[in-house]
Length: 444
Image (cartoon, rainbow, N blue to C red; front, side, top):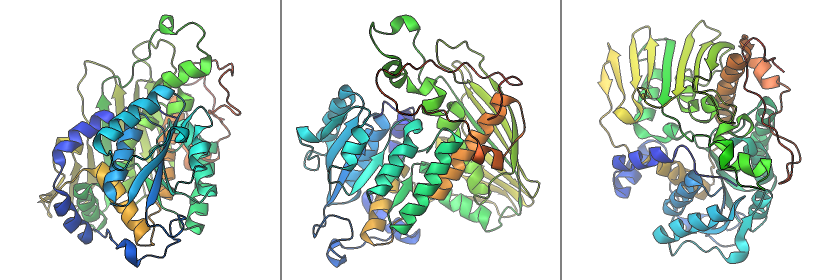
């Protein structure tokens, strides 16, 4: 299940940052990546009998899923793609065509391992794979993550990991189960796998800008996936199919623009604060450009407060013909840390002035390189808690903007609002929720 991801445009930019694989492997030793020879590993480590080949299944064949599959196939010499699933057959076909063009010798997907439909995720999980890549719209991820962990699969899970509080609670349960089973769970918060950003945030955590007091982040961009007019809806297309084709524009699927895209800037803030959650948030937001049937906002401004009095500010906007910017500034008592995203190398101003000058390999590739290396080494990475907490921080901001109320961390975590429909079927009658109205929309 999935569709062309709004983050796909980042990947073309990131390709310009590539260093050679040899350079990356040298650097990975410094940052803790462990590469173990398969011959040294116990044969049953991967749930693949005595074979050292890791079999990958892709759930969600859009742009991000296809990219993740390609990166998984590049991460390890003994990895093959054996199963794919999506709600739309066209997505499966286009994804496999692209992957076979780049990895002909590693794409071993037989026709009976191409799964289509709302239950395709379970069929991929049950198809004999060792690793699953979860790249569907976020609304489905708690369900898919739960199923993958229950089946004992190693997991790459794109961000965000849910769209509501009940989804986050499910995810946190799955994360703990994954730890018990010693399963890899690598999060798609890609900047955490960028060597330059790791160097910056390590220096911040080491106190080189003093105590962090304020974080300002922004995510200003154009419309990611415009909602088509209702007149474009083909005759006979069900509500569910229409919304899945236009998933970004519906809150139950995407979580809104703050949760689906600006969550990268939210994650920078969480990283700067050592992943200690904020205690509360107030926010403003709305829809400046009239929607054509979706129900997401096109701008937000969120003010987060931490227990020690530190503040986090996030500005987000997705309106065309406006200035674009995606950066973060971390203000400390002794200096400033500057995260420039794709615009340049991070740096520090102040007494401990510094600018990153090392390698900056493709962070999307690093995610998979380190995940597969951790599996081979028998020490699987588990990013699950921070994946859930960064996602909830964004959801908390959305809740504050939608309601116009101050929302605490505990309220967000324990919210009873369930955005994702239960027992979804193709013919489910699914009227989109009305656009939120601050001061009128109630917190649940």
